[in-house]
Image (cartoon, rainbow, N blue to C red):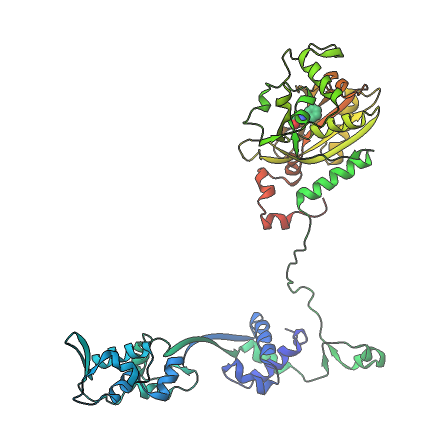
Length: 502
Ligand code: PHE
């Protein structure tokens, strides 16, 4: 090993240690001129390099507690008690506190120990508890021992008898305290000695100053080389959640395709979530097990009266759309029920009602809620990517082209469309992407052309292409995850491993 690879502190410590046997760290401070902290650090480094050996000993120290100190000054309470008593004089127990300077705890301990030493006797006379002195207190080993302790003392310095007494003293609160300290001793190894011998006290520097550069003085010194291969701590910087990163990416794609982003409320009336989308009032999706209804909340349905009437009309008999409708009495009270939106399609349809565009490209990303069992592929709360294109000549082919482009931009190349059904679109399709890893086609979402039963009541005449796609599925495909729950369980290992840039 090249001695130049050593830090100045290491060189210093090795040199000092080459002239010493096993040494305690604290003892090196004065010899080495280093601080204890510097010694500790260089010991760590030198240990890694096998140049010194480290031994850690645990030492038990005894110190006096508060009571122990007081006993050292005033004597044991049981002795103080007995010394106050006169032979042949019985005293009532309740009189004692007045006579003796002991607090309640000390007094009861004193009574107990004095009785067990047979210095006193406690007895009853005429229903009074009395105390009589039976013998004189003797010299106490405990007091002798306590007197020996001033400041922390190593347990091993006491004779074994004394250690026995110390152990029994633990029972008396606050007499003594044990403390365990670690003592580190180090010894230079054979390799260490070899290297220490080669350390020359030449002009060795490990900090280069501007002054040295200016004067050229650095030429006369040996510079410590830096070890660029030495391991460094991994730093985890704060960053966005992978789902957030993905949503931002989705936004960027749609904006680049000329779309405008819109938002809607998470809580909606059934009217916008279902009725305006020509979803019949007895549709299974509206049933409690799929939809979270907000208890006792009814919407005032602050909607253009004409739209309400039109929607009622298409549900009843199709009105002027050429459809027969659902053929039932539409109930406005059903439409007032508030729900946690089950899809973001309500954002699109509300946008149509508000703006009645002849042409538009609008998208939204938001949370939706479904009362389903949480599994590896289902969450109760998840995200959808939704959008519409309005235009005089737009066709289903345009929609397929648009989504193909969107998925491709996200990195999914194999896409196919499959006929499907939604109450509000005709024709309807399902989009699917091929997952190479899993070797199968995965359903992503629905799409189609809004039915006239949806658009006409709102006053929109041009065809409207619409789609709604699950977001979490895409995120899972992106990161190769096979359980959606993973996305939201805040598993730090996983979150840290996800690259910030795809
Ligand atoms: N709302 C449908 C869903 O949640 C998706 C969809 C949106 C289908 C727009 C057609 C048109 O699955």
